[in-house]
Length: 148
Image 1 (cartoon, rainbow, N blue to C red):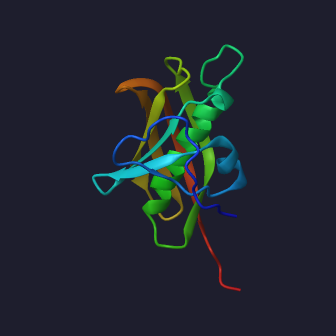
Image 2 (cartoon, rainbow, N blue to C red):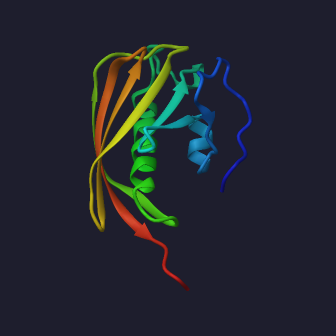
């Protein structure tokens, strides 16, 4: 299921980013996400932290930060393979470094460390105003559609 993007952010979108299509119902719930590709290789996914993204301490919810990183890393991994190839998360590790606050523009930059026939290894840093707030590493399994 995909949905056409509709501007729903309460904050201005920085130059170079476009609202991403919700690639799943979960992404539609967590977003809106914004994306851009840097250097033609590295994928950036971003979000403006809204009330719905906060935990009880009024900081960015850790699960939301992990979902943002997983989306950025998965998209970067997928782009490294032929069209029609999908990837699924095998493992994800994360480190929370600083809190994110309401209104923060959080950028997730994903970097492919290594890609093989069946696995892709990707790192990601989330930052606010160029300051790292979160780091993650993940392994993705390649899922190729089979013809029926």
